[in-house]
Image (cartoon, rainbow, N blue to C red; front, side, top):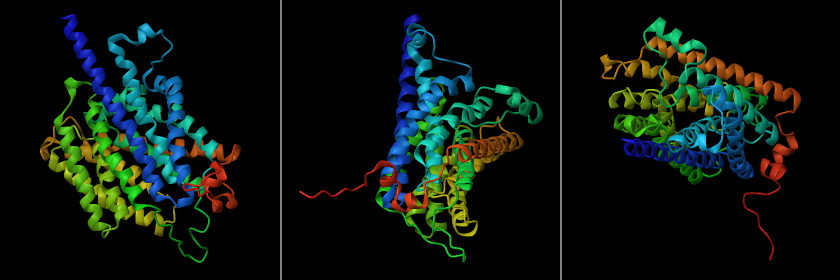
Length: 401
């Protein structure tokens, strides 16, 4: 029996470790999606930001964030930490990759004009305090909100893989940061004109989207966290939402490659919450709505509301994530072919709570940093580009022989 338990524990460790590695690889996707979208003079900065944000996130989550969310720390001896083949350690690694996605999401919204080190400070505060506050409420039952929601509406708020906990949180924090930062110089003219800043590299943008798409199956499927709990339904629902997002973005976006490659991401963001309870047809509808929602709201954000969200992270993660939280309470119902165990009102309340915490916390963190450290490059530095003004090197340097 002891040998069987040891094999089971080791299998769970390997399972969740593979998931952590897949989600870690997604950060390369975030990087290349941003590299392909920003102007050429900001490509180096995009790459450096994502990898440094991950390092800062690790420190913040290891020493503070994980304890805030789950009440667990890592100050015990190594022998205690390696019980059950070190399952709690790889679980921390897995959940860290989720936490680090928040600043990676924000990075795309504030690209091309944010200071480097103040953003690193914001990353630390978000991953140490703001994100794990809502993570703990949702996934660990902190502060009794889940118990209250269940008592009122029959079921707790359900977010299997983070449509709201990760994506909507990241998108609404980014919205606060983008508003406080302001638009890039020259983006919107006083006469109402709009200066287009087209993507610098569609191939890099597409590469980023593909890396994210593949890694997402670790993000969603491995959220089961043990082999015994793994579900093929999650994999198929992720697939169906992904293709729904692609096709909707293709049609509504009128063949625009930027929209097409963000389409699968919109679908996958939306299906995270209910991927374990929806029927595949419900997942397809969820992803299709998300793909269309992204294209429509991205266009409104950029052209009508004049919010300079460079990668459209508020429409993609913030709005599609919110839709996913609510969609789980629709297509997860048994009446619509779902597994049940969810209610529409529970999903609505949990989603609104997450968005409120994210937006309010984002304004607090970035507001304080703006007043103390400053969050914006000077007009001259922005004109020169973040690559040269921050990192002193261009993405492609030429040297005389």
